[in-house]
Length: 191
Image 1 (cartoon, helix red, strand yellow):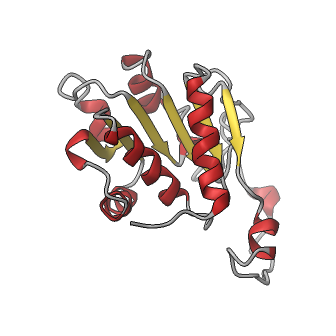
Image 2 (tube, rainbow, N blue to C red; image 1 turned 45 degrees about the horizontal axis):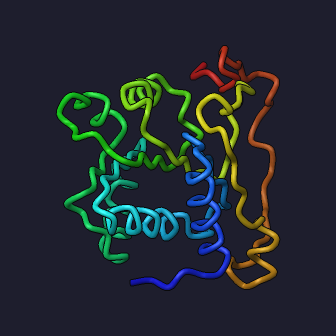
């Protein structure tokens, strides 16, 4: 079992407090590389320890495998967990036992139709969203999905406290950005 760093333990405690305060949706923002999987696993462990069910979903199969590994390492009771991609969950809503907690990784995708379908189906179940990037290019926020936001430490803090390696960024322009076309969501189109 992994021992959480103090900043990770603080995120777990703040999240639990937000749920106790009856927030139905909590968005946890923490930088890439900060150990969100460890925090997610600890919350799942504490939830299943009380014999409560967890539904975890994310948009990519690789991330499903990663979280299953983290759950095993953190001694999460996998008999009380459903861990799938968002598409599989959306297609099996009538087969899935009602969870006591929904956990979403990469929750910047929470506005997608499949995510909203799941949230609507389990509308009375509290949900936790984890992301390092709490925005969409469309500019539409998440307040209707997540009523509370908890922010983890910044990249600068993580680097200064030896939790992330420092970096140097090199780059050059790859083309003329003025030729790119944006769609209605603010994302670039394939054209």
